[in-house]
Image (cartoon, rainbow, N blue to C red; front, side, top):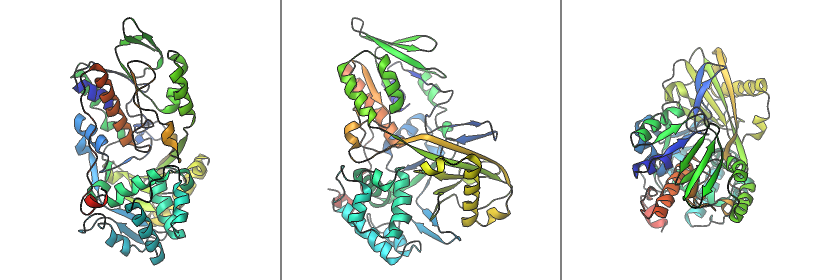
Amino acid sequence: MSAACALADAGLGVQLIEQRGYLGGRASSYLHPGVGEIVDNCQHVLIGAYTNLIGFYRRIGVSERIHWTTEMTMIEPGGRRSVLGPSLLPAPLHGLPKLLCASAFSLADKLALARAFAAILLGKATDPSESLGHWLRRQRQTQGALDRFWRLVIASALNGELDEIGLNYAAMVIRGLFLDSAEAGAMGLSTVPLSGLYEKVPAYLAARGGAVAMNEYVEGAAWDEDARTWTVYTRTGEVVAEFVVLALPFEATQKLLPHLPTEKAGERLARQIEKHAHRPICSVHLWFDRPVTELEHAVLLDSPIHWMYNQSLLQKRPGNYIELVVSASRNFAALKREEALGLALGELARFFPAAKEAKLEKSALIKEVRATFSVPPGIDSARPAAVSPWPHLFLAGDWIQTGWPSTMESAARSGHLAAETLLFATGEPRRFLEPDMEPRGLMRWLRR
Protein backbone atom coordinates (compact mmCIF):
# COMPACT_ATOMS: atom_id res chain seq x y z
CA MET A 1 0.00 0.00 0.00
CA SER A 2 2.80 2.44 0.79
CA ALA A 3 4.44 1.71 -2.59
CA ALA A 4 1.16 1.98 -4.50
CA CYS A 5 0.12 5.28 -2.92
CA ALA A 6 3.56 6.81 -3.38
CA LEU A 7 3.71 5.80 -7.06
CA ALA A 8 0.18 7.08 -7.62
CA ASP A 9 1.30 10.42 -6.21
CA ALA A 10 4.11 10.41 -8.76
CA GLY A 11 1.57 10.16 -11.57
CA LEU A 12 1.78 6.46 -12.40
CA GLY A 13 -1.35 4.43 -13.05
CA VAL A 14 -1.24 1.81 -10.31
CA GLN A 15 -3.18 -1.42 -9.90
CA LEU A 16 -2.94 -2.99 -6.45
CA ILE A 17 -3.68 -6.73 -6.44
CA GLU A 18 -4.72 -8.12 -3.04
CA GLN A 19 -5.23 -11.81 -2.37
CA ARG A 20 -7.68 -11.28 0.50
CA GLY A 21 -10.96 -9.46 0.69
CA TYR A 22 -9.45 -6.78 2.93
CA LEU A 23 -6.23 -4.80 3.04
CA GLY A 24 -3.45 -4.93 5.60
CA GLY A 25 -1.86 -8.38 5.39
CA ARG A 26 -0.53 -9.40 8.81
CA ALA A 27 -1.65 -6.07 10.29
CA SER A 28 -5.35 -6.26 9.51
CA SER A 29 -8.75 -6.94 11.05
CA TYR A 30 -11.69 -9.06 10.03
CA LEU A 31 -15.13 -10.19 11.16
CA HIS A 32 -14.58 -13.19 13.43
CA PRO A 33 -17.42 -15.64 12.72
CA GLY A 34 -17.27 -17.23 16.18
CA VAL A 35 -17.99 -14.04 18.14
CA GLY A 36 -19.56 -11.78 15.50
CA GLU A 37 -17.01 -9.05 16.23
CA ILE A 38 -14.37 -7.33 14.14
CA VAL A 39 -11.00 -8.28 15.63
CA ASP A 40 -7.39 -7.48 14.79
CA ASN A 41 -5.30 -10.46 13.77
CA CYS A 42 -3.07 -9.29 16.61
CA GLN A 43 -2.32 -6.04 18.40
CA HIS A 44 0.11 -3.75 16.59
CA VAL A 45 1.85 -0.84 18.29
CA LEU A 46 3.64 2.10 16.68
CA ILE A 47 6.41 4.18 18.17
CA GLY A 48 7.22 7.76 17.30
CA ALA A 49 10.36 6.65 15.46
CA TYR A 50 8.19 4.95 12.80
CA THR A 51 8.55 7.90 10.44
CA ASN A 52 7.64 6.06 7.23
CA LEU A 53 4.55 4.38 8.67
CA ILE A 54 3.42 7.70 10.12
CA GLY A 55 4.15 9.32 6.74
CA PHE A 56 2.01 6.70 5.00
CA TYR A 57 -0.86 7.31 7.44
CA ARG A 58 -0.50 11.03 6.85
CA ARG A 59 -0.54 10.51 3.06
CA ILE A 60 -3.86 8.63 3.14
CA GLY A 61 -5.38 10.88 5.82
CA VAL A 62 -5.74 8.62 8.86
CA SER A 63 -3.17 10.08 11.26
CA GLU A 64 -5.92 11.15 13.65
CA ARG A 65 -6.87 7.49 14.14
CA ILE A 66 -3.72 6.85 16.19
CA HIS A 67 -3.79 7.41 19.96
CA TRP A 68 -0.40 8.36 21.39
CA THR A 69 0.88 7.76 24.91
CA THR A 70 4.29 8.17 26.52
CA GLU A 71 3.77 5.91 29.55
CA MET A 72 4.05 2.15 29.99
CA THR A 73 2.44 0.55 33.04
CA MET A 74 4.07 -2.63 34.34
CA ILE A 75 1.99 -4.75 36.76
CA GLU A 76 3.21 -7.47 39.09
CA PRO A 77 0.99 -10.38 40.15
CA GLY A 78 -1.21 -9.01 42.91
CA GLY A 79 -1.54 -5.61 41.29
CA ARG A 80 1.52 -3.53 42.27
CA ARG A 81 2.28 -1.10 39.45
CA SER A 82 5.36 0.63 38.06
CA VAL A 83 5.10 3.30 35.39
CA LEU A 84 7.90 3.93 32.88
CA GLY A 85 7.89 7.14 30.87
CA PRO A 86 9.68 10.42 30.22
CA SER A 87 10.51 13.27 32.57
CA LEU A 88 11.68 16.84 31.92
CA LEU A 89 15.31 15.72 31.77
CA PRO A 90 16.96 15.81 28.32
CA ALA A 91 17.43 12.60 26.32
CA PRO A 92 18.88 10.09 27.07
CA LEU A 93 18.19 10.83 30.74
CA HIS A 94 14.47 11.52 30.27
CA GLY A 95 13.37 8.02 31.34
CA LEU A 96 15.77 7.67 34.25
CA PRO A 97 13.66 9.12 37.12
CA LYS A 98 10.71 6.76 36.58
CA LEU A 99 13.01 3.78 36.04
CA LEU A 100 14.74 4.53 39.35
CA CYS A 101 11.35 4.74 41.07
CA ALA A 102 10.00 1.53 39.51
CA SER A 103 9.24 -1.01 42.23
CA ALA A 104 9.26 -3.77 39.61
CA PHE A 105 13.07 -3.68 39.60
CA SER A 106 15.49 -4.15 42.48
CA LEU A 107 18.49 -1.88 42.94
CA ALA A 108 20.69 -4.56 41.37
CA ASP A 109 18.31 -4.76 38.41
CA LYS A 110 18.44 -0.99 37.91
CA LEU A 111 22.23 -0.94 38.04
CA ALA A 112 22.38 -3.78 35.51
CA LEU A 113 20.00 -1.98 33.15
CA ALA A 114 21.97 1.26 33.51
CA ARG A 115 25.15 -0.64 32.66
CA ALA A 116 23.62 -2.11 29.51
CA PHE A 117 22.10 1.21 28.42
CA ALA A 118 25.48 2.91 28.89
CA ALA A 119 27.14 0.27 26.71
CA ILE A 120 24.59 0.93 23.97
CA LEU A 121 25.19 4.68 24.26
CA LEU A 122 28.93 4.12 23.93
CA GLY A 123 28.46 2.10 20.75
CA LYS A 124 29.32 -1.27 22.31
CA ALA A 125 26.26 -3.08 20.97
CA THR A 126 26.67 -3.01 17.20
CA ASP A 127 28.00 -6.46 16.23
CA PRO A 128 25.33 -8.01 13.95
CA SER A 129 26.90 -11.45 14.42
CA GLU A 130 26.31 -11.49 18.19
CA SER A 131 23.03 -12.48 19.80
CA LEU A 132 21.28 -10.32 22.34
CA GLY A 133 21.41 -13.16 24.86
CA HIS A 134 25.18 -13.57 24.55
CA TRP A 135 25.70 -9.81 24.90
CA LEU A 136 23.45 -9.60 27.97
CA ARG A 137 25.48 -12.32 29.67
CA ARG A 138 28.61 -10.30 28.96
CA GLN A 139 26.87 -7.27 30.48
CA ARG A 140 26.20 -9.23 33.70
CA GLN A 141 22.45 -8.67 33.65
CA THR A 142 20.51 -9.79 36.72
CA GLN A 143 17.71 -12.33 36.56
CA GLY A 144 15.17 -9.60 37.34
CA ALA A 145 16.46 -7.41 34.51
CA LEU A 146 16.41 -10.39 32.12
CA ASP A 147 12.90 -11.55 33.03
CA ARG A 148 11.14 -8.24 33.59
CA PHE A 149 12.79 -6.09 30.96
CA TRP A 150 14.85 -7.82 28.30
CA ARG A 151 12.62 -10.88 27.81
CA LEU A 152 9.37 -9.03 28.25
CA VAL A 153 9.83 -5.61 26.67
CA ILE A 154 12.61 -6.11 24.14
CA ALA A 155 12.32 -9.78 23.20
CA SER A 156 8.55 -9.49 22.86
CA ALA A 157 8.95 -6.35 20.70
CA LEU A 158 11.20 -8.38 18.39
CA ASN A 159 9.14 -11.55 18.91
CA GLY A 160 11.94 -13.95 19.72
CA GLU A 161 14.01 -15.55 22.44
CA LEU A 162 17.08 -13.63 23.64
CA ASP A 163 19.54 -15.97 21.90
CA GLU A 164 17.55 -15.76 18.64
CA ILE A 165 17.77 -11.96 18.31
CA GLY A 166 20.60 -10.07 16.60
CA LEU A 167 22.22 -7.56 18.94
CA ASN A 168 22.06 -4.77 16.35
CA TYR A 169 18.25 -4.94 16.20
CA ALA A 170 17.86 -5.05 19.98
CA ALA A 171 20.08 -1.97 20.29
CA MET A 172 17.93 -0.21 17.68
CA VAL A 173 14.80 -0.88 19.75
CA ILE A 174 16.46 0.37 22.94
CA ARG A 175 17.63 3.58 21.29
CA GLY A 176 14.22 4.24 19.76
CA LEU A 177 12.10 3.39 22.80
CA PHE A 178 14.24 4.70 25.63
CA LEU A 179 17.21 6.83 24.56
CA ASP A 180 16.82 9.02 21.47
CA SER A 181 13.92 11.15 22.72
CA ALA A 182 10.57 11.00 24.47
CA GLU A 183 8.92 11.62 21.09
CA ALA A 184 10.70 8.68 19.43
CA GLY A 185 9.64 6.34 22.22
CA ALA A 186 5.99 7.43 22.35
CA MET A 187 3.64 4.50 21.69
CA GLY A 188 0.80 4.77 19.19
CA LEU A 189 -2.26 2.51 19.16
CA SER A 190 -5.00 2.42 16.57
CA THR A 191 -8.36 3.76 17.74
CA VAL A 192 -10.11 1.68 15.06
CA PRO A 193 -9.77 -1.97 14.00
CA LEU A 194 -6.59 -2.20 11.93
CA SER A 195 -8.26 -2.50 8.53
CA GLY A 196 -10.00 0.79 9.32
CA LEU A 197 -6.62 2.42 8.84
CA TYR A 198 -6.58 1.35 5.17
CA GLU A 199 -10.17 1.89 4.08
CA LYS A 200 -9.22 5.12 2.31
CA VAL A 201 -6.59 3.47 0.12
CA PRO A 202 -8.94 2.34 -2.72
CA ALA A 203 -10.43 5.84 -3.05
CA TYR A 204 -6.95 7.39 -2.78
CA LEU A 205 -5.70 5.30 -5.71
CA ALA A 206 -8.90 5.75 -7.73
CA ALA A 207 -8.62 9.54 -7.45
CA ARG A 208 -5.16 9.24 -9.05
CA GLY A 209 -6.15 6.88 -11.84
CA GLY A 210 -5.39 3.65 -9.98
CA ALA A 211 -7.44 0.70 -8.78
CA VAL A 212 -7.51 -2.09 -6.20
CA ALA A 213 -8.42 -5.69 -7.09
CA MET A 214 -9.51 -7.67 -4.02
CA ASN A 215 -9.81 -11.45 -3.67
CA GLU A 216 -7.32 -11.89 -6.47
CA TYR A 217 -4.40 -14.30 -6.60
CA VAL A 218 -1.22 -13.89 -8.63
CA GLU A 219 -0.18 -17.18 -10.19
CA GLY A 220 2.89 -16.06 -12.14
CA ALA A 221 4.37 -13.45 -14.44
CA ALA A 222 6.17 -13.32 -17.81
CA TRP A 223 8.54 -10.66 -19.17
CA ASP A 224 8.31 -9.53 -22.82
CA GLU A 225 11.74 -8.20 -23.71
CA ASP A 226 10.59 -6.65 -27.01
CA ALA A 227 7.64 -4.78 -25.52
CA ARG A 228 9.49 -4.20 -22.22
CA THR A 229 6.37 -5.15 -20.30
CA TRP A 230 5.24 -7.73 -17.76
CA THR A 231 2.17 -9.89 -18.06
CA VAL A 232 0.95 -10.80 -14.59
CA TYR A 233 -1.25 -13.89 -14.52
CA THR A 234 -4.01 -13.91 -11.93
CA ARG A 235 -6.66 -16.43 -11.07
CA THR A 236 -9.17 -14.58 -13.23
CA GLY A 237 -7.11 -13.10 -16.05
CA GLU A 238 -4.03 -11.10 -17.01
CA VAL A 239 -2.65 -7.66 -16.23
CA VAL A 240 -0.06 -6.04 -18.50
CA ALA A 241 2.23 -3.56 -16.79
CA GLU A 242 5.47 -1.76 -17.47
CA PHE A 243 6.65 -2.25 -13.89
CA VAL A 244 5.83 -4.67 -11.07
CA VAL A 245 6.36 -4.27 -7.33
CA LEU A 246 6.27 -7.67 -5.64
CA ALA A 247 5.15 -6.83 -2.09
CA LEU A 248 4.80 -10.24 -0.47
CA PRO A 249 6.02 -12.00 2.68
CA PHE A 250 9.10 -14.10 2.08
CA GLU A 251 7.30 -17.46 1.96
CA ALA A 252 4.77 -16.16 -0.61
CA THR A 253 7.68 -14.81 -2.68
CA GLN A 254 9.31 -18.23 -2.46
CA LYS A 255 6.18 -19.93 -3.81
CA LEU A 256 6.03 -17.49 -6.73
CA LEU A 257 9.68 -17.88 -7.81
CA PRO A 258 9.11 -21.01 -9.95
CA HIS A 259 6.43 -19.08 -11.85
CA LEU A 260 8.73 -16.18 -12.80
CA PRO A 261 11.24 -16.14 -15.68
CA THR A 262 14.31 -18.29 -15.05
CA GLU A 263 17.21 -16.14 -13.94
CA LYS A 264 20.50 -17.23 -12.37
CA ALA A 265 20.29 -14.37 -9.91
CA GLY A 266 16.89 -15.72 -8.87
CA GLU A 267 18.71 -18.70 -7.39
CA ARG A 268 20.51 -16.38 -4.99
CA LEU A 269 17.20 -14.84 -3.96
CA ALA A 270 15.82 -18.34 -3.32
CA ARG A 271 18.83 -19.15 -1.11
CA GLN A 272 18.30 -15.92 0.83
CA ILE A 273 14.64 -16.74 1.41
CA GLU A 274 15.55 -20.20 2.73
CA LYS A 275 17.37 -18.54 5.65
CA HIS A 276 14.22 -16.82 6.88
CA ALA A 277 11.78 -18.14 9.46
CA HIS A 278 8.56 -16.88 10.99
CA ARG A 279 7.63 -16.48 14.65
CA PRO A 280 4.05 -16.63 15.99
CA ILE A 281 2.10 -14.12 18.08
CA CYS A 282 -1.08 -15.20 19.85
CA SER A 283 -3.92 -13.05 21.11
CA VAL A 284 -6.88 -13.85 23.35
CA HIS A 285 -9.98 -11.68 22.94
CA LEU A 286 -12.34 -11.54 25.91
CA TRP A 287 -15.70 -9.80 26.39
CA PHE A 288 -17.02 -9.37 29.96
CA ASP A 289 -20.29 -8.15 31.44
CA ARG A 290 -18.49 -5.40 33.38
CA PRO A 291 -15.17 -3.50 33.36
CA VAL A 292 -12.16 -5.34 34.78
CA THR A 293 -9.61 -2.49 34.67
CA GLU A 294 -9.44 1.25 34.07
CA LEU A 295 -6.07 0.95 32.28
CA GLU A 296 -5.81 1.32 28.51
CA HIS A 297 -2.88 -1.10 28.32
CA ALA A 298 -0.32 -2.76 30.56
CA VAL A 299 2.72 -5.05 30.62
CA LEU A 300 2.14 -8.16 32.77
CA LEU A 301 5.22 -9.25 34.71
CA ASP A 302 6.16 -12.83 35.64
CA SER A 303 3.38 -14.20 33.47
CA PRO A 304 3.05 -16.29 30.29
CA ILE A 305 0.73 -13.49 29.08
CA HIS A 306 2.74 -10.42 28.14
CA TRP A 307 0.44 -7.52 27.26
CA MET A 308 -3.09 -6.36 28.06
CA TYR A 309 -4.99 -3.95 25.80
CA ASN A 310 -8.36 -2.55 26.85
CA GLN A 311 -9.98 -2.24 23.44
CA SER A 312 -13.19 -0.83 24.91
CA LEU A 313 -11.15 2.23 25.85
CA LEU A 314 -8.64 2.29 22.99
CA GLN A 315 -11.11 1.66 20.17
CA LYS A 316 -14.23 2.95 21.96
CA ARG A 317 -15.79 -0.48 21.43
CA PRO A 318 -19.09 -1.39 23.12
CA GLY A 319 -19.03 -3.84 26.00
CA ASN A 320 -15.97 -4.64 28.05
CA TYR A 321 -13.45 -5.95 25.55
CA ILE A 322 -9.97 -7.00 26.66
CA GLU A 323 -7.22 -8.30 24.36
CA LEU A 324 -4.29 -10.26 25.79
CA VAL A 325 -1.15 -10.78 23.71
CA VAL A 326 1.61 -13.37 23.92
CA SER A 327 4.76 -12.67 21.90
CA ALA A 328 7.49 -15.20 21.13
CA SER A 329 4.68 -17.64 21.76
CA ARG A 330 5.58 -21.07 20.36
CA ASN A 331 4.62 -22.81 23.60
CA PHE A 332 1.36 -20.89 23.92
CA ALA A 333 0.56 -21.47 20.24
CA ALA A 334 0.81 -25.22 20.84
CA LEU A 335 -1.98 -25.15 23.45
CA LYS A 336 -5.49 -26.27 22.62
CA ARG A 337 -8.17 -23.59 22.61
CA GLU A 338 -9.66 -24.39 26.01
CA GLU A 339 -6.21 -24.66 27.59
CA ALA A 340 -5.16 -21.29 26.17
CA LEU A 341 -8.39 -19.56 27.25
CA GLY A 342 -8.20 -21.06 30.73
CA LEU A 343 -4.61 -19.92 31.15
CA ALA A 344 -5.44 -16.42 29.90
CA LEU A 345 -8.42 -16.00 32.21
CA GLY A 346 -6.47 -17.25 35.21
CA GLU A 347 -3.60 -14.87 34.51
CA LEU A 348 -5.93 -11.91 33.96
CA ALA A 349 -7.47 -12.49 37.39
CA ARG A 350 -4.00 -12.54 39.00
CA PHE A 351 -3.40 -8.98 37.84
CA PHE A 352 -6.93 -7.58 37.82
CA PRO A 353 -9.01 -9.07 40.66
CA ALA A 354 -12.21 -7.58 39.21
CA ALA A 355 -11.97 -10.24 36.49
CA LYS A 356 -12.84 -12.88 39.09
CA GLU A 357 -16.31 -11.36 39.59
CA ALA A 358 -16.95 -10.54 35.93
CA LYS A 359 -18.88 -12.90 33.69
CA LEU A 360 -17.17 -13.90 30.46
CA GLU A 361 -19.69 -13.37 27.66
CA LYS A 362 -17.64 -14.51 24.65
CA SER A 363 -14.06 -15.18 23.68
CA ALA A 364 -11.80 -15.75 20.70
CA LEU A 365 -8.29 -17.15 20.32
CA ILE A 366 -6.17 -16.05 17.37
CA LYS A 367 -2.87 -17.69 16.52
CA GLU A 368 -0.97 -15.65 13.93
CA VAL A 369 1.65 -18.28 13.13
CA ARG A 370 3.48 -16.05 10.62
CA ALA A 371 3.26 -12.82 12.61
CA THR A 372 6.86 -11.69 12.10
CA PHE A 373 10.07 -12.90 10.54
CA SER A 374 12.86 -13.64 12.99
CA VAL A 375 15.98 -11.46 13.23
CA PRO A 376 18.79 -13.79 14.37
CA PRO A 377 22.44 -12.72 14.18
CA GLY A 378 23.60 -12.43 10.58
CA ILE A 379 20.13 -12.22 9.02
CA ASP A 380 21.02 -9.05 7.10
CA SER A 381 22.90 -11.07 4.48
CA ALA A 382 19.60 -12.84 3.67
CA ARG A 383 17.60 -9.64 3.19
CA PRO A 384 17.52 -8.65 -0.52
CA ALA A 385 17.49 -5.11 -1.84
CA ALA A 386 14.51 -3.54 -3.59
CA VAL A 387 16.11 -4.26 -6.98
CA SER A 388 15.22 -7.79 -8.08
CA PRO A 389 17.04 -10.14 -10.49
CA TRP A 390 14.43 -9.31 -13.16
CA PRO A 391 14.08 -6.12 -15.22
CA HIS A 392 11.37 -3.69 -14.14
CA LEU A 393 10.43 -5.87 -11.13
CA PHE A 394 11.06 -4.60 -7.62
CA LEU A 395 10.76 -6.13 -4.17
CA ALA A 396 8.95 -4.80 -1.12
CA GLY A 397 7.94 -6.32 2.20
CA ASP A 398 9.11 -5.98 5.78
CA TRP A 399 11.78 -8.67 5.23
CA ILE A 400 13.82 -6.91 2.52
CA GLN A 401 16.79 -4.63 3.30
CA THR A 402 15.22 -1.80 5.25
CA GLY A 403 17.54 -1.69 8.25
CA TRP A 404 14.54 -2.41 10.50
CA PRO A 405 13.24 -5.58 12.15
CA SER A 406 9.84 -7.11 11.34
CA THR A 407 7.56 -4.13 11.98
CA MET A 408 4.92 -2.07 10.21
CA GLU A 409 7.63 0.57 9.84
CA SER A 410 9.81 -1.87 7.92
CA ALA A 411 6.88 -2.70 5.64
CA ALA A 412 6.04 0.96 4.94
CA ARG A 413 9.72 1.78 4.48
CA SER A 414 10.15 -1.07 1.99
CA GLY A 415 7.26 0.30 -0.07
CA HIS A 416 8.84 3.73 -0.21
CA LEU A 417 12.20 2.17 -1.13
CA ALA A 418 10.60 0.18 -3.94
CA ALA A 419 8.81 3.29 -5.25
CA GLU A 420 12.03 5.30 -5.22
CA THR A 421 13.99 2.52 -6.95
CA LEU A 422 11.30 2.14 -9.61
CA LEU A 423 11.17 5.85 -10.40
CA PHE A 424 14.97 6.00 -10.55
CA ALA A 425 14.78 3.34 -13.28
CA THR A 426 12.41 5.57 -15.26
CA GLY A 427 14.87 8.44 -15.19
CA GLU A 428 12.52 10.56 -13.06
CA PRO A 429 13.81 10.02 -9.52
CA ARG A 430 11.73 11.16 -6.59
CA ARG A 431 12.17 10.78 -2.84
CA PHE A 432 9.55 9.08 -0.69
CA LEU A 433 11.57 7.79 2.26
CA GLU A 434 10.83 9.82 5.36
CA PRO A 435 13.96 10.87 7.27
CA ASP A 436 14.62 9.20 10.58
CA MET A 437 13.62 11.14 13.68
CA GLU A 438 16.57 13.16 14.91
CA PRO A 439 17.84 12.42 18.43
CA ARG A 440 17.12 15.20 20.90
CA GLY A 441 18.66 16.61 24.05
CA LEU A 442 22.13 15.29 24.79
CA MET A 443 21.59 12.46 22.30
CA ARG A 444 22.20 14.91 19.47
CA TRP A 445 25.88 14.83 20.43
CA LEU A 446 26.11 11.32 21.84
CA ARG A 447 24.87 9.74 18.57
CA ARG A 448 27.46 11.53 16.44
